[in-house]
Image (cartoon, rainbow, N blue to C red; front, side, top):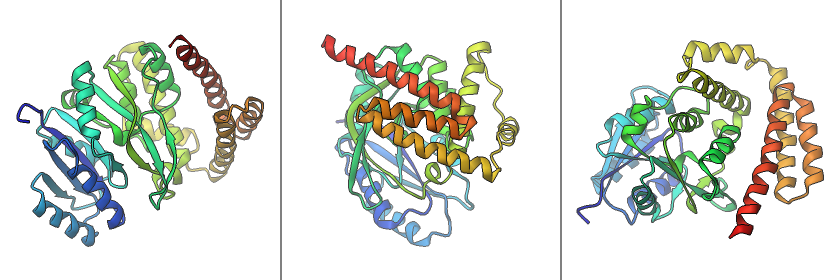
Length: 330
């Protein structure tokens, strides 16, 4: 329909296998919502095979706008570049190894415009590297109050980056993404909350989210953890003074202070994280005693994670009972 607003889908690709990249690309091109431009940034100019594939896709579908970096720029710079090239007022994120449901954009644009949200996201279906379903992961319960949502996201990032649709003027007003290792998206969500922008949470899974053993979030858990902690520090600074002290120099000082380059610290953190995952699984199965036991073991292994693990444990129980009470009221 002519009165439908244009949306700009932004995706960066580096070294994804062509069959996986193809599924991501065609999941956007085959959307029931067709009024879109698809901005694709190739961040590996040496990947000739993928470049030729994307050029062929562009010949078949003129909605594709292909940009090839001369050198590897990293995700943050690619996304910020893509935003500058977007011509619509709505930005849709997409990752090159995920698969969007065919009606994802249609549902997100309707939910955003009907409720006047500044950003929306959805739950996801978890898939492995072979594309097989391995589980589901839900976003924040839509019945939670704004203050409860702020508490949840402050302690735990439950927004899946490639499910997000956000207003272009909002993300530009926040100066786009900032270069915080494996936490550039989390930093953005906390800045949205600091400015009291409204985020809508769609309970339906609108994207298949690939669990990749070689992704940064899995190969650099310690860097991701420190990035998340740094984003929380910046959030606290904004609560006190309405602005934060982010700079690449300050961020690098933070990494050094917390022994990011110390192999022993990384080893202890990895063991702590492994125990935390066991505790999380017991919590999901409502085996509370075992969840408590492994949470305590996790906090003992790494002093850096002690305070964080205990806070997560406390808030998991808190939000579990809030959700239970909301269900009982219904």
